[in-house]
Image (cartoon, rainbow, N blue to C red; front, side, top):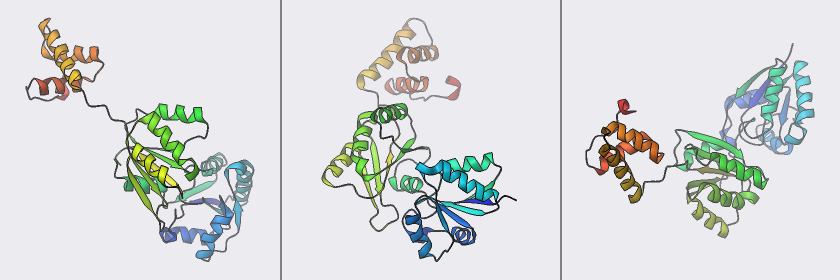
Length: 287
């Protein structure tokens, strides 16, 4: 009978954040598979956990994954942990999950702290809709293509970054996404936890004077349509009124003006009524 894999979330800094269930599982399994055994052994020693350790990391995930699957098929109970936080988030844990599914091996998740959700709440930016983007590639063209792909996304954007690449990443974000609001979170849950909030350019200035240290989570404001200029407002009114003068009713003129200007009908409707002081707002039946 096959064993069971436990995907165990561990603290991202403060050891006091470990859950009772995580401790129970780590003490009960036959083997603990760790991204870095040297790092994980400190956690295990702190809580007097004696289970044997094996390594499972990115550059050896294929052969180590096969070894873990063999042990699971032999009936062993295995816990998977990462260096910090939830395995499977920007680490090779997701590959082991796929192997378990392919081999019909039972697995479960023991939830725990996750850096990107912690940073999102700390950021003060919108939490209602967000996109976790993980680590940007080190390849310049790949980074540029990734940022270009997401620059019009309205969701709050979240990135992980290492200290030695932080300044370059901030510069790339400024170039590709513009001078948006950003929160740069470092050393989350640890003694020197810090959140630097401001515009991207302001945060760049901060780190030109301060050497980046620790692990970073970057939380970036989502895309927002630029506010219409006075010229844009006049263009909306003139476009609608010209069409009305040609014989269209207001509803049809607004629809056609929106099409001509490449703007949403709702935006043209509300802008026209605001400027002409008609006061009514867009209703669903005007779509």
